[in-house]
Amino acid sequence: MSFSRRDTLALGAGAVALTALPLRVSAAASADEVINAFTGGADVADGGVELTAPEIAENGNTVPVAVAAEGAAAIIIVATGNPNPNVATFNFGELSGASSASTRIRLAGTQEVAAIAKMADGSFKKASRTVKVTIGGCGG
Amino acid sequence: MKFKTMSLVAAVAVALPTFAIADADDDKLVVNGDMEMVTKTKAAAHLDGALDEAISGWHFRSDETQALQADDFDNPGMIYVDQAMDDWVKVEGSEGKSCASCHDDPAESMKGVRAVYPKWNEETGKLHTLQTQINHCRTERMGAEPLKYAKTKINRMEAMISSHSRGMPVNVAIDGPVADIWAKGKEMYYTRFGQLELSCASCHEENYGNHIRSDHLSQGQINGFPVYRLKNAKLTSAQARFKGCIRDTRAETFSPNSDEFHALELYVTSRGNGLSVEGPSVRN
Amino acid sequence: MAEGVKPRVKAPKSAAAGETVTLKTLISHKMESGQRKKKDGSPIPRSIINRFTCEYNGKSVIDVAMEPSISTNPYFEFKAVVPEAGDFKFTWYDDDGSVYETTKSVKVG
Image (cartoon, rainbow over all chains, first blue to last red; front, side, top):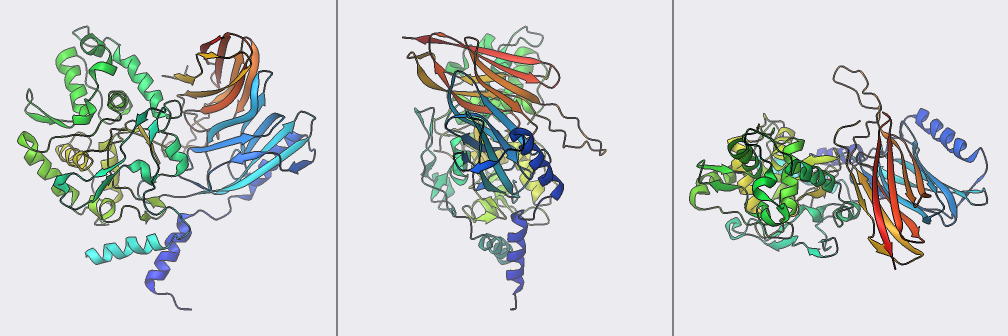
């Protein structure tokens, strides 16, 4: 298949613009450590946790995310590809109105963001999504 | 020459078919549930068909970013407005005054001010941007040191003053004593700069709605300035952005408060005449 | 104490007894992550707000352990139950030992 110069330019620009390359393996190992510290090594079931995050982050410096898990005592957010994967842990108190919270986080590049909830009965649930972080054009 | 530039930008735009949002969306911006913003309006007459519609930069951002501007407690730019309110009542300079000494409650006294700046100043015989005017008051009325242009303290004062004109239409004069300056600004807007030989118009008039790599190009309107940029998590002034844009064409750029940028700020503001003042807005 | 740190909180001025309300909090803080480097290549040390708490009449609403991946000017939105009239107390704890606080009163009935 022969590419015209324009095609090559276009493909090259497209590939560079999305940092689809996997981030360093060492960061991922650390994400597991963070999760294990939270769960004490217990099993984590999928589902029962809502993680709201954009599909494509407008800018990796400030990414709005929200977590919710009905009946959860605490929820941790883990950015598996960040140099510090532990983002925050929300501990819901006696007068919490709902086991939910929103915040804004930094994402170093395209990666999987996970939310793990510790339920009132001591069990763990999780949800995760991939958030694409782009490198902008001129302004970005 | 023109063809070569167009095709590079066009090729890049074509390379990202995964982006669903190409043109500006149709959402409505209502701040705090009651401040309706005009974010699309018939283009000012002086544009002479160069644009059909003036569209606020708000429309070119993702849904998540747009939401950040809808509530003054979501908008991080408002933290700076709070800080500016502290500055407003602080006594500084040889005259023992604060801004409040003359201007009292900015919600009253500053209403409508942002909407008409940059503006001719009879006293100095010069074009004043809002930042120039802030420093003019400081040095001439307060006997205080001027603030550094395009830096945090003056940006947040501009943001606070601007916040009291939100929802009002941008309405800068382009005739009379400013006519020549406006013409210079217009010329600069259409001048190609840098190794990349891009003019403001190359992106913001000929390619708004398209992407440059993964940036969604807006019309480059500045009705929302000073803007809280997610990228550096702080306020950016219009002239700081001009400086960055020209630097990005790989040119020797100009400085904030230069004559060139005064002229450009007047012209670019006038391209948005009719849009609501949004500052401080939230952008990428 | 980090300079110019200012909290900004949205809380209702009044609520019905037992109502669930939404709170929004912002605070100006650089949240220096420890990842950035100076021009000479030496690292800029971490300096963040590491904990945020909200209490109502002394009872915990939320307690957030914060790490460097929280963005500059930390923002939290969460819900609280208002059983009776009282005060929300919002507290932020800085790495450098500073504590920032603000209080919002709520009327009931």
